[in-house]
Image 1 (cartoon, rainbow, N blue to C red):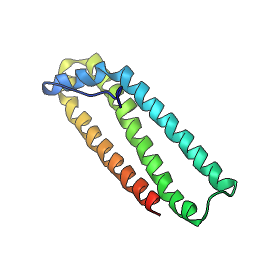
Image 2 (image 1 turned 90 degrees about the vertical axis):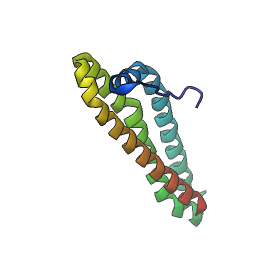
Image 3 (image 1 turned 30 degrees about the vertical axis):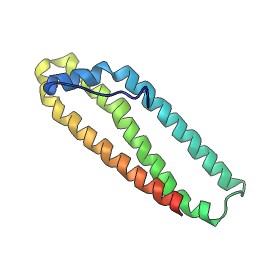
Image 4 (image 1 turned 135 degrees about the vertical axis):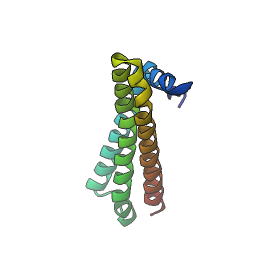
Length: 128
Protein backbone atom coordinates (compact mmCIF):
# COMPACT_ATOMS: atom_id res chain seq x y z
CA UNK A 1 0.00 0.00 0.00
CA UNK A 2 3.04 2.25 0.22
CA UNK A 3 2.91 2.81 -3.54
CA UNK A 4 -0.88 3.08 -3.77
CA UNK A 5 -1.77 6.34 -5.53
CA UNK A 6 -3.71 8.96 -3.60
CA UNK A 7 -5.50 11.96 -5.07
CA UNK A 8 -5.52 15.45 -3.60
CA UNK A 9 -7.30 18.12 -5.59
CA UNK A 10 -8.86 21.55 -5.50
CA UNK A 11 -11.95 21.74 -7.65
CA UNK A 12 -13.04 19.70 -10.63
CA UNK A 13 -10.14 20.54 -12.93
CA UNK A 14 -7.68 19.77 -10.13
CA UNK A 15 -9.32 16.38 -9.60
CA UNK A 16 -9.01 15.47 -13.27
CA UNK A 17 -5.42 16.74 -13.46
CA UNK A 18 -4.44 14.85 -10.29
CA UNK A 19 -5.88 11.57 -11.62
CA UNK A 20 -4.14 12.09 -14.97
CA UNK A 21 -0.83 12.94 -13.27
CA UNK A 22 -0.86 9.73 -11.24
CA UNK A 23 -1.95 7.54 -14.19
CA UNK A 24 1.35 5.68 -14.64
CA UNK A 25 1.66 4.88 -10.94
CA UNK A 26 -2.00 3.86 -10.79
CA UNK A 27 -1.64 1.53 -13.78
CA UNK A 28 1.45 -0.09 -12.29
CA UNK A 29 -0.03 -0.66 -8.84
CA UNK A 30 -3.39 -1.92 -10.08
CA UNK A 31 -1.80 -4.04 -12.81
CA UNK A 32 0.36 -5.76 -10.17
CA UNK A 33 -2.72 -6.26 -7.98
CA UNK A 34 -4.63 -7.87 -10.86
CA UNK A 35 -1.67 -10.16 -11.62
CA UNK A 36 -1.50 -11.28 -7.97
CA UNK A 37 -5.24 -11.90 -7.88
CA UNK A 38 -5.03 -14.05 -11.01
CA UNK A 39 -2.13 -16.04 -9.54
CA UNK A 40 -4.18 -16.56 -6.40
CA UNK A 41 -7.18 -17.77 -8.43
CA UNK A 42 -5.03 -20.20 -10.41
CA UNK A 43 -3.48 -21.56 -7.21
CA UNK A 44 -6.87 -21.99 -5.55
CA UNK A 45 -8.36 -23.74 -8.57
CA UNK A 46 -5.32 -26.01 -8.81
CA UNK A 47 -5.68 -26.86 -5.12
CA UNK A 48 -9.27 -27.94 -5.76
CA UNK A 49 -8.35 -29.76 -8.99
CA UNK A 50 -5.71 -31.99 -7.43
CA UNK A 51 -8.13 -33.06 -4.71
CA UNK A 52 -6.50 -31.39 -1.71
CA UNK A 53 -9.61 -29.37 -0.94
CA UNK A 54 -12.34 -30.69 1.32
CA UNK A 55 -16.03 -29.73 1.20
CA UNK A 56 -15.40 -26.45 3.06
CA UNK A 57 -12.89 -25.27 0.48
CA UNK A 58 -15.17 -26.24 -2.37
CA UNK A 59 -18.20 -24.56 -0.78
CA UNK A 60 -16.33 -21.27 -0.38
CA UNK A 61 -14.84 -21.37 -3.87
CA UNK A 62 -17.76 -19.70 -5.72
CA UNK A 63 -17.82 -16.79 -3.26
CA UNK A 64 -14.05 -16.47 -3.42
CA UNK A 65 -14.22 -16.29 -7.22
CA UNK A 66 -16.91 -13.60 -6.95
CA UNK A 67 -14.57 -11.70 -4.62
CA UNK A 68 -11.69 -12.03 -7.06
CA UNK A 69 -13.76 -10.85 -10.02
CA UNK A 70 -15.15 -7.84 -8.16
CA UNK A 71 -11.67 -6.92 -6.90
CA UNK A 72 -10.36 -7.12 -10.45
CA UNK A 73 -13.29 -4.94 -11.59
CA UNK A 74 -12.48 -2.33 -8.96
CA UNK A 75 -8.78 -2.41 -9.89
CA UNK A 76 -9.61 -1.98 -13.58
CA UNK A 77 -11.76 1.07 -12.83
CA UNK A 78 -9.23 2.76 -10.54
CA UNK A 79 -6.11 1.70 -12.37
CA UNK A 80 -7.03 1.94 -16.02
CA UNK A 81 -10.47 3.40 -16.81
CA UNK A 82 -10.38 6.52 -14.59
CA UNK A 83 -6.82 7.55 -15.58
CA UNK A 84 -7.60 7.05 -19.28
CA UNK A 85 -10.76 9.16 -18.98
CA UNK A 86 -8.89 11.90 -17.11
CA UNK A 87 -6.05 11.96 -19.64
CA UNK A 88 -8.55 12.18 -22.49
CA UNK A 89 -10.36 15.08 -20.85
CA UNK A 90 -7.15 17.03 -20.36
CA UNK A 91 -6.16 16.51 -24.00
CA UNK A 92 -9.45 17.99 -25.18
CA UNK A 93 -10.15 21.13 -23.16
CA UNK A 94 -10.11 22.42 -19.62
CA UNK A 95 -13.89 22.91 -19.59
CA UNK A 96 -14.26 19.23 -20.56
CA UNK A 97 -12.19 18.40 -17.48
CA UNK A 98 -14.60 20.39 -15.33
CA UNK A 99 -17.62 18.58 -16.75
CA UNK A 100 -15.90 15.19 -16.58
CA UNK A 101 -15.19 15.36 -12.87
CA UNK A 102 -18.70 14.05 -12.17
CA UNK A 103 -17.97 11.01 -14.33
CA UNK A 104 -14.77 10.36 -12.38
CA UNK A 105 -16.63 10.71 -9.08
CA UNK A 106 -19.14 8.13 -10.33
CA UNK A 107 -16.26 5.82 -11.22
CA UNK A 108 -14.95 6.25 -7.67
CA UNK A 109 -18.33 5.28 -6.21
CA UNK A 110 -18.56 2.26 -8.53
CA UNK A 111 -15.06 1.24 -7.50
CA UNK A 112 -15.95 1.49 -3.83
CA UNK A 113 -19.13 -0.55 -4.31
CA UNK A 114 -17.18 -3.30 -6.09
CA UNK A 115 -14.47 -3.30 -3.43
CA UNK A 116 -17.02 -3.59 -0.60
CA UNK A 117 -18.78 -6.43 -2.41
CA UNK A 118 -15.41 -8.17 -2.81
CA UNK A 119 -14.61 -7.85 0.88
CA UNK A 120 -18.03 -9.22 1.86
CA UNK A 121 -17.74 -12.16 -0.57
CA UNK A 122 -14.18 -12.97 0.54
CA UNK A 123 -15.09 -12.79 4.21
CA UNK A 124 -18.06 -15.09 3.67
CA UNK A 125 -15.91 -17.54 1.70
CA UNK A 126 -13.32 -17.58 4.48
CA UNK A 127 -16.03 -18.10 7.09
CA UNK A 128 -17.25 -21.18 5.21
